[in-house]
Image 1 (cartoon, rainbow, N blue to C red):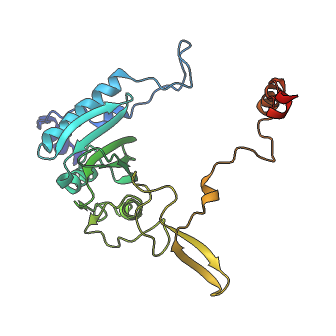
Image 2: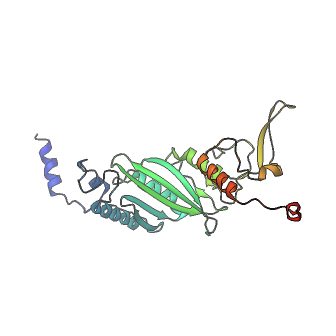
Image 3: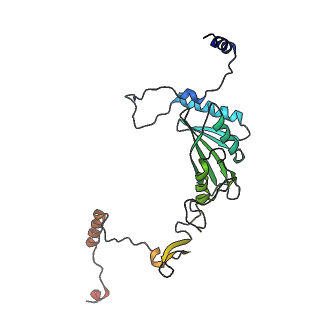
Amino acid sequence: ARLLRPIAANIHKAKILSQPAALSQLCRYSSTDTPKDKSPTVRYADPAKTKMLSEFGQYVADILPRYVQKVQVSNGDELEICIHPDGIVPTISFLASHHHTQFLNITDITALDVPSREYRFELVYILLSLRYNARMKVKTYTDELTPVDSVTPVLPAANWYEREIWDLYGVYFANHPDLRRLMTDYGFEGHPFRKDFPLSGYVELRYDEDVQRCVLEPLELAQEFRKFEYSSPWEQFPKYRVADAVEEAEKPAEITEGEKKK
């Protein structure tokens, strides 16, 4: 006890700097009982939580004003930080190492393709802080030719996520340790999740009896496969098919030219 008295005295005399509303304030014990006037299946926004997230997002924007372009809270409790592509590594490093964030887990990296935009690809990094039980989205943008710095050196779990985006969207990640295709087959050409990629693709894979192996060939569609055939031996909608048959039966029969002469 004698050893702890000087330490306690120094802590009491020390000045504590005012910090913004940190994510630790969100980790309060709350009841799981749903009020009678609210539905248990609807997620209602908490104004206090939304305000705390907005203040924390503004705190991050004040620390990284060079990279953060916009801070918003969607759906009441989803903090989104939109940044410049050059700041993806500094921003992720700050969010992972800062004491009041500790977003050490990356749950997913996804992309969005909008060909009408100047920067058609939008990258979304979904981060998780186990210490503060909070999630955050970091969004950035790029085009077909501009590479984006890889965050794998900061968060190793982003390795396969970036490989998947490179395979499906064609977004190149610089300084990635092993940027290879992940979802498509060997020798695949193109990126299938782009909006300008045809649904039928460019190549087809089939088993060749002559060479006794699978071969990859340019896609060939016969003309009969391009026509839509609505009739089916399986009656998925018998109610409507019976109604159509009754309407056709009730139509007056057409008089042929031979009957007109008679």
